[in-house]
Length: 306
Image (tube, rainbow, N blue to C red; front, side, top):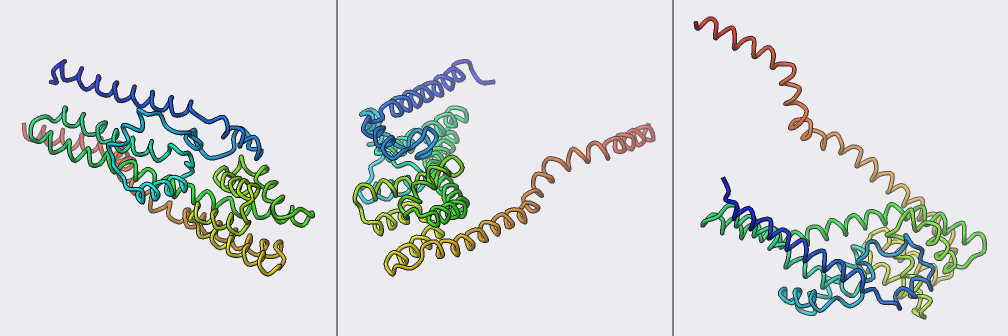
């Protein structure tokens, strides 16, 4: 059995880490700049709209968080790549990269120290180092999953946004007005896409050329559908062709791709259900159906042996 001192040490370690993480999250969320709140109001961002999550528009992080993040030294190029990845996941705040670096410091401790204490000895050191390595890689894996999920959400919402853009354009609105209207109407249904379109609108209102704003949208999302859409919009803006007709054709293609993705997921469900059935359902089914017969056979052999 584990000694009371060892149990108390493990509990105290987890409590300290949880307290530190909670305090850091509270400080970070509370330090939102007033000017960024005014920016939200200026571009008509509703309560549920905007970048996903409370970390989306964080101001400069707390000095304690910056000091913890300094334990993971990164070159300027690495920080730039990290910020781009965080932007693709929906975290556009100034402190997002610092908080991610803190997670890379805290996660190995949270995973490695309990393993080191519970296993103990030389094996505990080996398993603790392995667990710490897993904890160090875990934030990057989670970030990759968030990027892929956001990219998928943008692709799924693109056909509906394009349909609303077509309606607004045919009603006499300009392209910029149509984007603003579509963003307001579909932000709750597709928050990631609404967030990116809002940033596009903010850039154009700030005086940035429309083509450059479209290119920035493509760079932020790294989505093939958005890349094709941006290329089409740039061409129509350059040559003066009909935007609504081009959007209608592109919307049909995007809707076909979305339906094909849904059909692909449905086709994969049968294969994905094999492992839960084999590991969870079939053993219980065998125990219920074959178990009584096995018990009777064992009893019969025991009686014959006597």
